Amino acid sequence: MNPQLIQKLEKLRQNINCGEFILADAKDADMAYGISSPGKDPDRNGFRSMSFLREQMLEIVRSRQIDIMLTSVSQVGFFNKEKKTFDRSGVTPAVRMNDTTDVWVGRGANYRSQPSRSFATATIAEVKKIGASAQELKVNLGLYSITFNNNLDRDREALLDFKKFRLEAAEARFSYFLEVFAPNVECGLTPEQIPAYVNDQLVRTIAGVPLTNWPEFLKIPYLGPRAMEELVNYEPRLIVGILGGGSGTTYDAFKLLSEAQKYGARVALFGRKIKDAESPLDFVRYLRAIVSHQIKPEEAVRAYHGDLQKKKIKSFRSLREDLKLTSTEIAYAQK
Image (cartoon, rainbow, N blue to C red; front, side, top):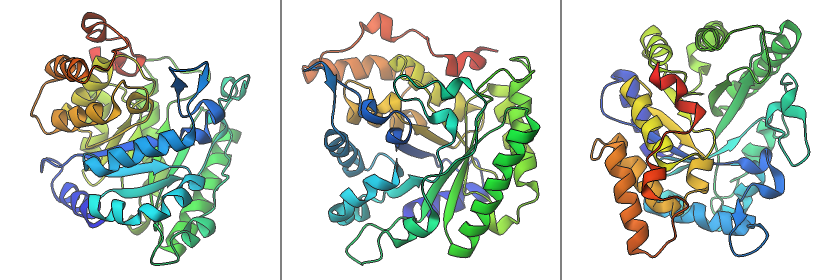
């Protein structure tokens, strides 16, 4: 990991209220959506290319507004010639280490409607070979994901695979962060029970893991103030982060970030919210300004629209529409 990220993590472990906040751009959608992952091309009836998306990624890396750039393993090789860019920026490259079936959401697929099953395309051995040369971009941070569905056989299978992964990670001195999704199918729990269920399964999962092999931080859906505070207060050493979910309005993203930070989150990993923005670079700049307490979410939306006008970039929505809350990711924030 880049020294900048290591320092932030250490400061947060010593004092969760130290003022540090870690922002990540999650550009690993090709392990979920396939061809459509770079997003729609407004100039033609189709989708953008991965080369277009890589240029967007590099622009954001150069801005130094983020701490982590998460990609698929396959994309890392394209950035070998940009090693100095990452080094100068202080941004740590990371890769998605498993792709459970609930992220198999390509066109026509129905896997997401079935209980998640454990699966991993990437291997630690392959990732460790990346960056073997001093001229190549070295990766030593990965995302591992688990989806619990209150299903004994499926959840046990997921935990066995996680055990295998973390033992291999420890042996290879490979760092990781842990993502825990809410159930992806009907699981016998009410919506009100889901936050406590996710918290309990997450904590139970790492309870038997030595501290030396704990995840660097967590990535979970934002399930409201009570659930966030409960998890943060349980063990201050656990640095809790949120995932961004769907695109939504600009206010959806800015308000989600502000609410999550208010109740204890110290990491945010936004993917589609950044990728699908009219101006991803300006969008990320306001994310950083929000967590630095330089601007409030409502003001940030207005300022963002002002930047779009100055740059003559057509906004997807009117300012009035973009100031509305529409995303399910922050439904719990109102409870």
